[in-house]
Image (cartoon, rainbow, N blue to C red; front, side, top):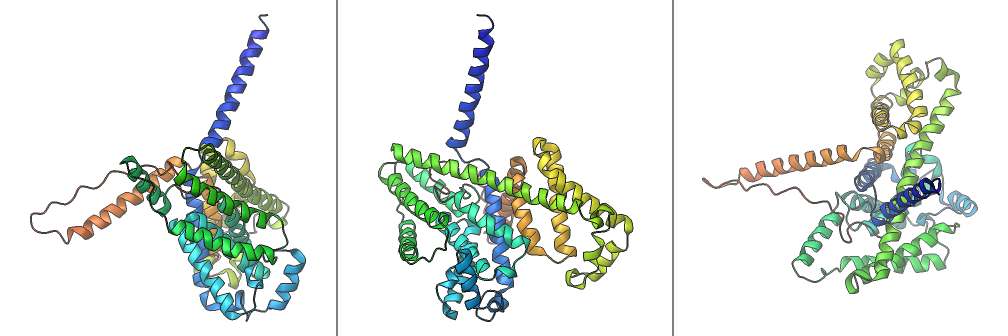
Length: 423
């Protein structure tokens, strides 16, 4: 009898811990600030890339590229990838897709109607990259993956126009008003449905099963969520959709973390097998290539120091190999995270690969501590208020007092802010 008591107590403790874990992953989306930073970083990276390549868009993805439309069609027919650029070889259609991708990146950056803009952004990224698969690099692969994962995350809970609108609607409801009138949401939902139905019937969503299934689940789920939120906000089905959305968000966030660890682990272990990385000279060779030398003088200074080359080479390998194992120690993880971000910043400057570095830093942001992100967000808020208060100060009348700054904004996690099944 006495021996069974500790066993029962241990089983009860395990059951309680399991119940708390289930409650934690189903009750709310985890990493709201981290997912918001990933959203902002990935969308800003691709937006700047598309703007940078605007004069060369026809050569990269359009009708003037070396990888012609007929060649791309044969390849895509074989691998079953998705790209709306194969729907027509018209130059007007290409320009439309390029502009819509630009617009979706900008909308995702500011977090406007993120359910819609994240799907449009994913479609644009996949369309352009799958059209000319030989034009990308490692940074494009990261953007490709993150564009898919962001669709499943509730990445607009904070630092977005969606969060601001949700807070305003919640305040309106608290004052006794009814649900806010929403015209843009149903209109965008209807437009997506009008595009999704013929694309599915005509086989325009690629040769895979997961993309059409994902699109229809997102479209139907968001329609049901919107209707229940306004007609029966306390309905059990509405609660179930929120639980499913939280599970999808947390699972996608875990996949993003695993993806980043996999990238660094494979890169580090491959480097270990190279003789140039073993003898500490690998960094020297790209620094001496004209193609990767936007600042020849700076590259020459670094390459001229054998000690600097050796230290940078070994630090790169050690940080990449060790990073996945440091997730169990928060302090060590934060130190290596700083090293990884610094490494990518150095690659951006020394090797002239800014978009690759921005993509990797955006993915790394999923591991940033919440305390640091809150401090950073508060700093940006204070700077913005000082800037606007100075601008308003120049317009004050004599004797007029400067208005007191408003209080800090509350977290935008309540109600229906952010995404449902779309992210």
